[in-house]
Amino acid sequence: MNNRAQWGTRLGFILAACGSAIGLGNIWRFPATAYESGGGAFFIPYLIALLTAGIPLLIMEFSLGHKFRGSAPLTFSRMNKKAEWLGWWAVFVSFVISTYYGAIIAWAIMYAYFSFGQKWGTDTETFLYDFLGVSQVEAGQTGVFVPEVLIPILIVWAVVLFVLYKGVRKGIELANRIFIPTLAVIFLIIVIRAVTLDGAGAGLDAFFSPDFSRIWEGEVWVAAYGQIFFSLSIAFAIMITYSSYLDKKSDITGNAFIVGFGNSSFELLAGIGVFSALGYLATQMGEPVSEVVAGGVGLAFVIFPLIINEFPGMNGLFGFLFFASLVLAGMSSLISIVETYVAGFSEKFNISRSKAVIFGGGLAMLVSLIFATQGGLNFLDTADYFINQFGVAFIGLVEVIMIAWFLRKLGNIQEHANSVSSIKLGGWWKVSLGIITPLILGYMMFDLFKVNLL
Ligand code: PFF
Ligand code: NA
Image (cartoon, rainbow, N blue to C red; front, side):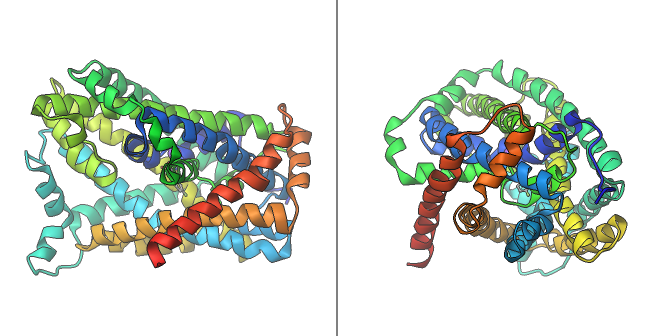
C-alpha cells in the first residue's frame, strides 16, 4: 500500500475531479433541465440539492477513498466486508456509462470536423440520422458498422486507454492539466460571443424567468437531485477512486467545496451560453425561444448545427470550438469512469495497471462498438434512460442508507475528514446525509417505481 500511486499536486487532484464532474451533463443536460423545471426558480431546489446532497456526498466519498486507499470495491470492503458488492455495482454502472459516453464523444469529433463548411446542410435532423445510419435501418437495410462512427470511437478509446496506461500522475493528471484549462478558455470565448449575439437577451429571459409555483412539485426536486448526482459524478465509484490517490495530508472538505462550486459555476456558465445562442436562433427564425429549446443529442447535434449555420461570421471556427468543448469535457469524464474499473480490476485480481487497462478497457471498447452500428442511437437512448432512472440515484440511496444507518459509519467518516480538513464538519453534514438525502432519494425512487411499474 505504500507504493500506491499519488497525485503530484493538490491542483492536479482538483483538476482531475473537476474534469470528471464537468462533462456533457453541464453542457447539454443542465440548461434544458433548469428551463423545464421552473427556470430561475429551479436554482432554489438546485442549490439545496448541492448543499444537502452534492457536497456532503462528495465529502463522504473523498473521505472514504482517502481513508481506505482503494478503488470503490476495495474501499467498501475495507470499511465492512459486507459492503464490497456496492462498489462493484457502482463500477458496473460506470462501465455501462463509459460505453456510450465514448460514442457521443466520437460523434462530437466528427461534428467538429463537419463544422468547417457546415457539412450538415440545412436539414440537420435528417443529416444526423443519415450520419448515424439510422435512416438505413428505417429503409430496411441492415449493414452493421457505420465507418464514420466506428473510426472516431476507436480513436477515443485509444486516447483514453493510453492516458490510463500512463498512470495517475503522468496520465490522468497530465491529461486534465491540459484538457481543463483549455476547456475553460474555449468555453469562455464561446459564452462571451454568445451573450453578445442578437436575441441573447430573449434567450436569457427564457432561461432565468422564474416560475415559483413549480417549486411545490415533487418532479422539480427529483430533477434537481438527479442533476446534482449525475453532474458531480457521485455514486459512480469515481470520486472514491480519485481520492484514494491523495496524499495523507489533504484538505478533503476544502477540495469538495472547490469541486462542487466549480462544477456548478461551469453549469451556470453553460446555461448562459446555451440560452443566449438559443435566443439568437429563435430571433433569426422569428420564433419564440420555447420552440428551439432542446437538451442532449437534440441540442448538440440538431439545434447547434442550426445555430452555427446562422452564426454571424466565423461559423466554422465557432462550430469547431463548441464541439471541441464537448470533446474535452467528455474525454476528461470518460477517463475518470474508465479508471474506476481499471483500478477495481487491478486490485481485485492483483494484476498490473497495464493489464487492467488492456482487459477492462479493451472489453469496454468492444462493448461500445454496438454504438457504432446502425442501431446505435436506439441503444444509447435505452442505456441512458435506465442508467439515469435506476442506476444513479438508486446507488446513492443505498450508499447513504447503508453507511449512515446499517453500518453507522458517518461518525468515523466525519472524524477522518475533520482530522485533515480546514473546514470542520458539524451537524449539517450528518443531518444532510443521514436524513435529508435518504428521504429525498427514497421519494425519488418511490416516484420512479410508481411511474414505471404501476
Ligand atoms: N459528471 C459528468 C457530467 O456532468 O457530464 C458525467 C459523468 C461522468 C457521469 C462520469 C458519470 C460518470 F461516471
Ligand atoms: Na457535471
